[in-house]
Amino acid sequence: MKINEISKKYNLSVDTLRYWEKVKIIPQIKRDKNGYRIYSEEDCEWIEFVHCMRNGGATIAYLKKYLSLASSKRDTRKERKKLLEKQLLNLKNQLHILQQNYDFLEHKINNWNKYFE
Image 1 (cartoon, rainbow, N blue to C red):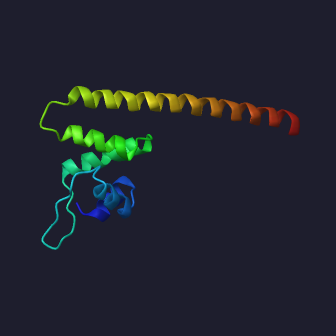
Image 2 (cartoon, rainbow, N blue to C red):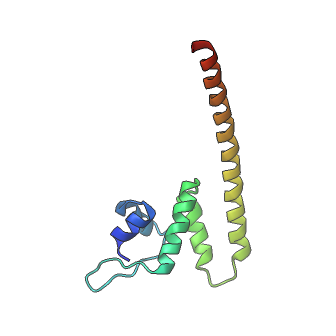
Image 3 (cartoon, one colour):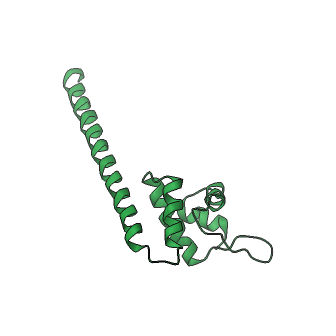
């Protein structure tokens, strides 16, 4: 797949994809004879992973560490699992905060309706 197809498939800008490659949170993408990026299925899986993690608040540094572990020649499964568990806990905490905010605003709107309708 080419960069425009990937951009549309994952709803990411071309600039974001290029940036992720530049900062090395996705592996170096192969190019065709004209220099155009050609994304493999494996590249797409990484992009999907990075997109999910970035949406969940993962930092560039976190993703660099994860990619470094994933591409290591030694067995890093336990370390990567710990990183993922830490990110999941962060998401759980964010969800809790969002739920509290949601409940507060819902209560405020319901009270608003009582007094002004």
